[in-house]
Image 1 (tube, rainbow, N blue to C red):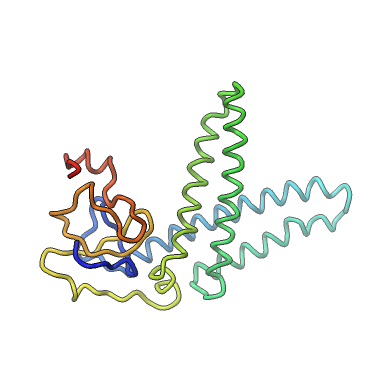
Image 2: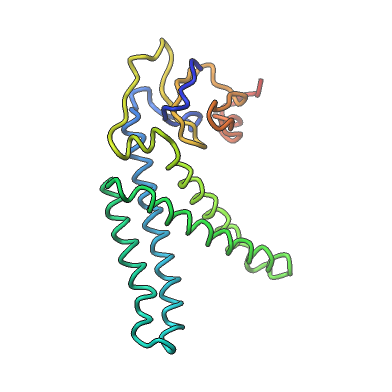
Length: 213
């Protein structure tokens, strides 16, 4: 691995990025998947607001519709704008995903308590909520990446011309920091200079028979 490119980004150790893949294409892929997660998280928040609105309707009448109508309008506006890469929607979208992550984590804790108490039927839901919370927190972290923000607001530069022989661009699978790597020299001991997490997963290392140095 040559140089500290922690301010750039791509996908390292993910098993199969082509050398011709550009940062722009990788950003587009990440942005599309993040937009999908934003849509799902927004729907969940609106459904929760709908439940609260249904309960409050007996007390406030039709005014209780605002409890879910306002979140529906706000989340829909943010999703459409985020999908179109409007500048103002960048952090509001991250806040929605973060809010959903907190909800998922609370549901995970509730189900964890129930499982410990003997209600093993909630084990699957607990695992799903745990994964959903982790995945959403990861997406929030993407928004703190300088290159992800740059790609969202303007464009992503393509520094392929600066690569040495045998190098290719790949992104850290944890923090999305862009790195220049030598695939033939990559090992489980290599860590991202930005987040210090391994660039190669244990599963991928076992699959290819790589041993940690």
